[in-house]
Image (tube, rainbow, N blue to C red; front, side, top):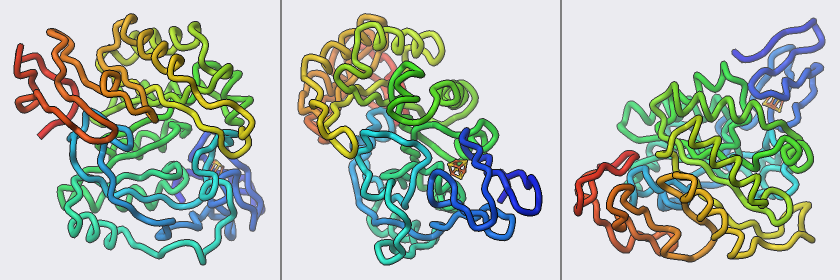
Length: 333
Ligand code: SF4
């Protein structure tokens, strides 16, 4: 494996993500899917996935990347984050069980994408950072066939592998879990700084289309101050054209006692983002047409109206507002 340091004949360090796990021969990393086998770190889930589905791209969520197109989604096992509120713990927090996995090669994934008329392939359900090689091999092949690729990720990856990874991705939704290191440490067993560095890198140094999602958890990352800090950081470091999705938490995994996100909290975050000057703010895990609509940054006319994941009105001609000709940021047909 490329991103590793052989420390001695018994220990090899995986350098894919900032955990930099030092693994003895036979030992698995924090993610539970990378193992030191005879001094080499091996991805044990290469070519295995937990199932595939055809989703609207809006479900990723990506609202500015070929709207209304189909995406072939898949994931594997494991995760390099330790989120106490994980919404997919049944695949991320369980040991590998090959009886529950399907053997699917990158070539077969491309075949499915073509067969089911999918514009893109999404590496999702669990974080593709932990199935880096499988995702990249699939993405390389997808490019040959004109199929786009999407990474749904926490962005908790070291910068060198991130350069390679995002070079092969056409779009990404990065989960910015909160805007304090306290939250990352307490609720994700991680640190925020590497994530912010990766987000800045993707936006400013790659062609990969970027949208962000923050899952708002009452009392944990939902204060006005924290949301304002996050939105100001986005504005200053990424620009006003970066879409931000504030989505609702429902009790899961180790946060079963925690209350679901209130509608008012989502609305408050949405309004803060808009008032700070972010052009494209949205709510998620909530059925609300107004806060799921893309408004023209110039004339404020609804450019794309959505009801859930469905587009109910499209007022773009190409990528331009049909009323005032202003460009909608993103990738469109
Ligand atoms: S990818 Fe897995 S094994 Fe590698 S450093 Fe991260 S958690 Fe550890």
